[in-house]
Amino acid sequence: MDDDELDDFINRARKAGFQNHHDFLGALISGEAGFDRRERHDLLRIKGELGKQGSNLNQLTYAVNAGRLTALTADDRQVIDRARIAVETAAEQIRALFT
Image (cartoon, rainbow, N blue to C red):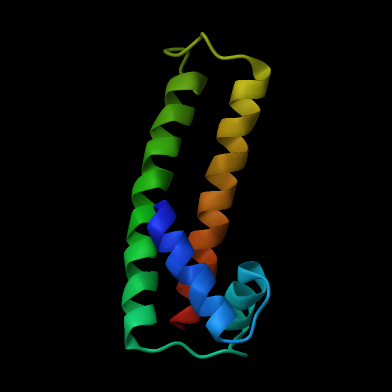
């Protein structure tokens, strides 16, 4: 998600009466807030992008674990792992919206 897309989501959250876009995302996930056709389209695009980012992070993690990428500090590895988990969690939350 780029900065413009995030800004659009934050604006939609405010328009829906939420002060915090994270609360709006939670309401969407739990079904407490609905979303229109455009929002559904945007969520599907975001889910696709998350899949690409998750794939990139998995490839990076594999390279580290295989010893092909050794110039990383422990902090670097921790950041990569946290990013991978965040991407997987976000994708899972969006997937749950459609079930």
